[in-house]
Image (cartoon, rainbow, N blue to C red; front, side, top):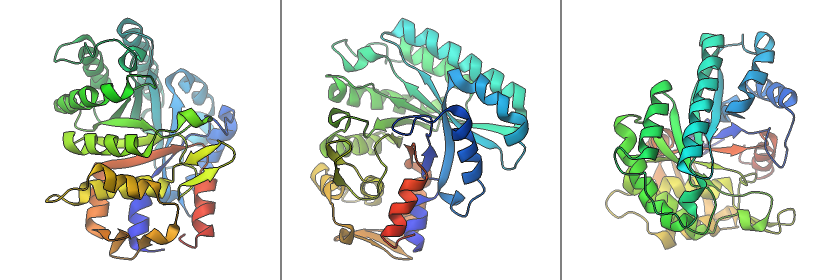
Length: 325
């Protein structure tokens, strides 16, 4: 395997076996993750994705699974709700569940990240209020961060007709919270079970640029099962490729003097030809654009973090079919 591809994919896949389309019960999903932690490809593995509401159930398997070093890593889903009041209450309850989980298991577990769904009203017709310093959403987030200040917090705008209008104020607000949480970032949903769940390549490109401009890390969730973009019968639309998305993310940050524009990132995101991507030991390239190995490592660690996948096998099988792994 070329060093640039290994750098691109190190700790890249957060295991989300509990979620569709796999939607495994908790026990087999946890056992899968425990096995993946010991396999030869464990270097690609991120944390186990779990809703806060299921942490108590996770504890039933602690004696059997949590004793193997390093700590069992979790990315915990929190928040949600139609409005700010519901969001505030749900977030406080989720933080309490996660706090008790860590108290119970101590150094055997690590809440490495929190994935926070913001109120539904942000992507509907409601004004973007509460995002100002001291506003209700701002206070709620900062209070929650105090419980897990070392975790990365990735905030998601729920799907809705005003999603695009919400992107600039939300990413600007998240940038202002970095005094409380230097690892605060943005979460972008990249697919689902139906065609309307898949964002356009233009939306992905604009999210990458919004995060670049605001100095925010980004993680992705859903739909990134395969390395290269392709029309997939099971979802009746084009499914984004995780290599397309990650290479676009790296290239979005790689050029300080003449950064790539939306249309240039869209070209990366829309390629369906593996031959457009070249991985060498010292560089990766998409057509005429390239990034050096040191930059790939820095950008992955700081800016382009991971993608949630309900399968850890499918991405690896496809990489092997391409003879890249």
